[in-house]
Image (cartoon, rainbow, N blue to C red; front, side, top):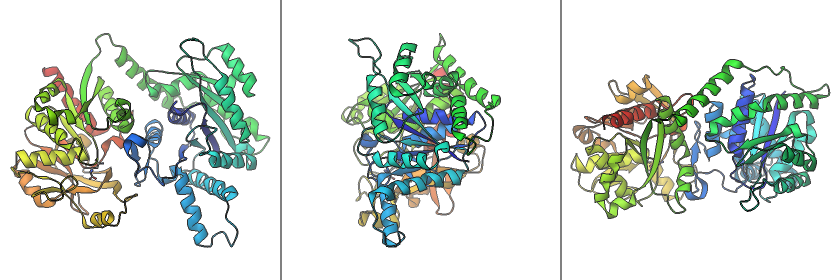
Length: 560
Ligand code: GLN
């Protein structure tokens, strides 16, 4: 029988609920269980696609083309499983379908109300995901923090599920324990209040994961246990650690998976309990643990081998922290690939706008072993990015362009090698004499009708790789599936001109004859991809193109 574990946040947001959820999933997988995860975002936006990255962080795209939250990326990376539309919901999406059903007379003439109809819709979505994936455990991460007005209806759904099936539902609160500098002591009171607030929603946590700068000691465990009505053993210490991938290891040291499984057995009272005995799949667990050991060793080597990668971005409005959030999958993909190659990546953010003001500064880029221009929108900082790409091309610095980074590389080569003066994307200049990056008719209509939500080219499309290309060699496959999120495309009218200039289309979507990959001749690595390979990189299985890019960056480093 399917089991549900709700993960809620106490005290404050941003303490790693997504990683905690993913890690609980991982350790349950190590016991041979099938696991899936759902992220609930309490905002009204139907999906994350229309929000700007400063507002939201990365928009993670699933195989089936949903623009979702970056936590789905964590689930995919930890659980090594693809997520789909049914793994995500927002308040907006839930209301949208309830209203749609009401218009279709699906409530049989009843008055449709916030309670119970909204929580019921939430429950049916959760159960649908469990059924669809045939999961033993469905983890449901409720976004935000308890006590917020916004997520109340989701907590209400959780409460109703527990009431209807007590043996199948469990609650985990991920809370934060501050250590105020002046006090120097870890404080449990905010967590006590958070649990009380959760209690007012009719929910008692079964486990508390105590996030803090330091490990939790026994006196504080006891305090939490007494005041939060929970066994001391069920308070899990989760101190800050170097790498998020160590979190499952840390949980397992405290026997969390076995505790969860035992508790479900206790709930059972003869009905609906766990069917399998807790038996660790040693081989699976070992694989993950070996990986974590390896990255810790790479980090602590006395002569740490470092590869320097520069990412050119523009989202500096609220400082560099925003960037980390906006490009989390790119960063993780670089890490996976570097670790795989036995190196530690040093990732730096480069503000492209500085090169527009002062092109002389471009020389500084020689410091880097590899340069990435990731996805982006709009014209700000674009000319600086194009200059950067030109520099990487001439200096033979490995260059990897992701989506916008591919389009801008095409513009750079178009202008400077193919001599198409003023070549541009129509996104940046609609009157350009050489619209080398253009837009399809259906996308034109979308824009004209202001139909922006969920209307880009989204999700996985097949891409056929040309023989003899870097990409074909890297993938070792003839056709690959990669995820997209963009409106503009390489304009096929310029394909031959670009080829003459040395930039060849090496990956094609046959069905629509779209260029998906370009590669430059006589350069160690100058590859642009119209898709987002970063979404498919996994810690134990880094993305082939990132692996190849990093390999070439390491080569440059060792030549220096
Ligand atoms: N702005 C470009 C487009 O819409 C690229 C988008 C992206 O990089 N994700 O086509």
